[in-house]
Image (cartoon, rainbow, N blue to C red; front, top):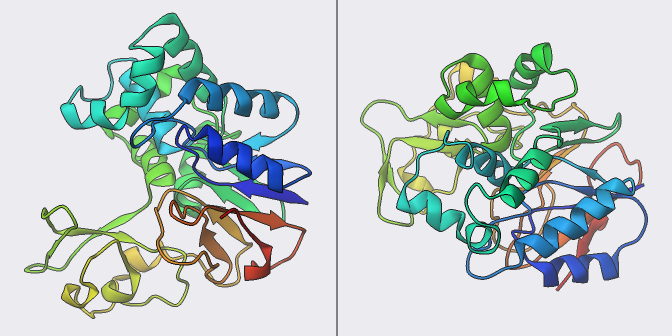
Length: 281
């Protein structure tokens, strides 16, 4: 039995509400820091670290990885990156001893966990990417010497790490593009890799305001390999800021529903079911 808790983003109230509604062993899917507006990074981190020290499981999210890179000068110091990281910077500071202590702790969090009957990753369970990282880091935990190539995405190892915490993307066929919610023209699309029956760009596209602009063309074999097999063990992720009512998608699902927070109570079942969802609203 394990209750899986997705992205908290420095929301202490949400963490308190979750802990008040669930019991038993806990698992966290990362992204503990970086509130969209205001949050309490330090309090959330302190609470989660205490739970992990007491036996809870936790993995690294892309915000933790970004923070590790930023505070070591390996992530671009741009206004957008500072805006994303502002609540942590406001509370804990830039490259302060406390910032370096917390980002050092982030490196103790594995990129994935395989619990036998359940798999956890922040954004994507990619068999080839996990194999690439595990060949060097069997426990899934990164080390300081790995960071330059991750920040530069200059090697297969570095790119594999980024996909595990940020998810796969596919370049659209020549001549095709879409305009995202911020009005930016994009020629690469996020893949809803958990949709095991997705065989076309349109069916696999994620976070596209008008899916009909995505070509209804078959995915090439290389991209199709990113789609999670229907007969693989169940996997839970966060990351994707899902909308609507929480639900599971076959044997893989994102629990990141910011407007309708939820968790998932896993009791050993071999397939994810909507009845496992714990709604917090």
